[in-house]
Image 1: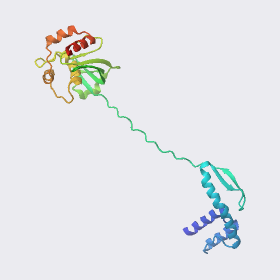
Image 2: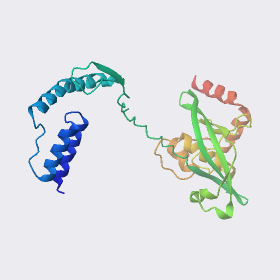
Image 3: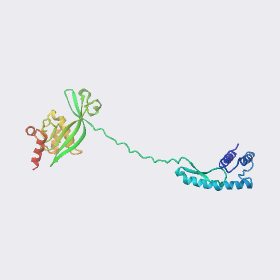
Image 4: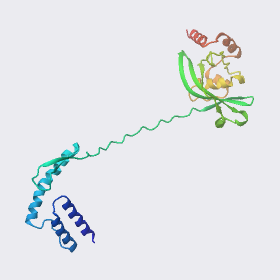
Length: 268
């Protein structure tokens, strides 16, 4: 059977299903299609009158269906005869397509870099800076509060900061205060003794201050600054605190309040 005949038969089925053709008319037209004769949907004046009658109620029904479809009600004739009063039949309303809301891209949280503080007696200490806040600014001096996470690694397994995977990190961070000041360069833990750093161009810092100087330089050096050791740092940025001066100042300022009072007095 050709595709044309199949399509013609499908159209006849649709016309019979919608009531335009009776079963008798459908059989006649189907025989014509299968026999190769031209298909005529309406074969007599009587059937034409009947088809016109059906069209008069079928078209308004379709119009009412389009209007009422949004409310979930479709008006259909009570029977297949034209002129019959329509009755309402509830149908499911058309599904509403909700717009797809774009989800915001997840925020990219960068891991703070791990810094090698120093190595001594077979072990190396590490730190990560988790947070930094400026607590107070007095003239050119600024007091910062840092939140650091410490860690430790075996000195034999540590060649540099690329060995961060071998670090065993502490379970909780701790607070460290940093006073960026040319007169009182200080790194200390709240509640512990304060030691002023002896930063000057002539002397190098003792090894015991290696970790403190690393933190101090990271916080207090200008952005993008390049320097070598502590003496080079002091030379570039104007520090002149000798070892004797640092020891004397450390005996005078033993608390955070002492530091701030000293800075405030120097600014007057």
